Length: 157
Image 1 (spheres, helix red, strand yellow):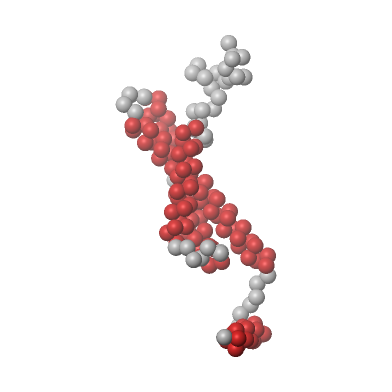
Image 2: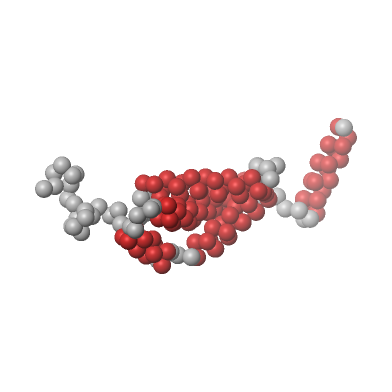
């Protein structure tokens, strides 16, 4: 066994000296790890935004009342929806999976688990965004008369 390790290290060192393979500095792998994390975060944000719209749509469908304002808001939201976020989500998820599989330390995990983790966390974040109205244009601090509130409800008359 010791001879095998010695011959492998000698083989690798000889290949480096011949120029067949190149060593990379530590900063290279640090930058790749950072890029992987950033791509994963942005993919999660894009999916959270998409799932927030989907949950808003489901909420609108489940209401038994006419809710014309709510349906109008949904129509406006879908009309203003940036559909390129779906492409961005797919591209960033593919980039994250590629970088993790090639350079990451979790290469032992299956690709589907990595993708499912990104989608599950982002879907939960989208549900939370939808529940609390985060990012909703109609929760901008306006009351029912359309005037901007200047303070807490107990100070407004």
